Amino acid sequence: MASEWQAAVDASLNIVRGVAGISTATWPEDSQNATVFATGYTGEGDDMVGPPGVRKSLGEIVIEVCTSAKEPKVGVPMLMALVDSIPHELLKTANYKLGGTVETFEGVRHTRIQEMPFSGYMGIAFTLYGVKITTNYT
Image 1 (cartoon, one colour):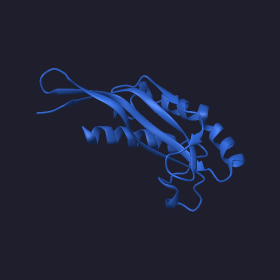
Image 2 (image 1 turned 135 degrees about the vertical axis):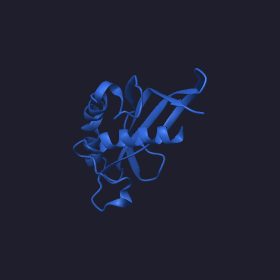
Image 3 (image 1 turned 90 degrees about the horizontal axis):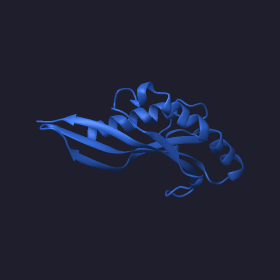
Image 4 (image 1 turned 45 degrees about the vertical axis):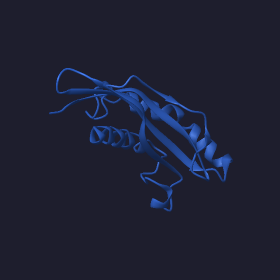
């Protein structure tokens, strides 16, 4: 199941990193020019028993879009410009399937601009919720 969730996170990141204004760097150290970067991981979720040989998962994917907190006058407007464009890009994926990595997801919510848990950065966390993945197993 981990590989299915990782594929869904990667597909989400590919969409977000395609938005104008976001670096393709996965972490600020990956590029000298990365002013806004995105990282992603799974959020909370539930695994449920399905029919024999099937496991159903319902969960979240969290994409954090971050920039340096050293110059808020520069960083805040850069992040604010992404509040509409990132959900738009994620929601326009064909049938909310993230490139076929998930069955569907319900929507996207975001946080306010805030200091991120890792020092020196501020950002917005975009959460894809109601992400549904069904896996056959033997």
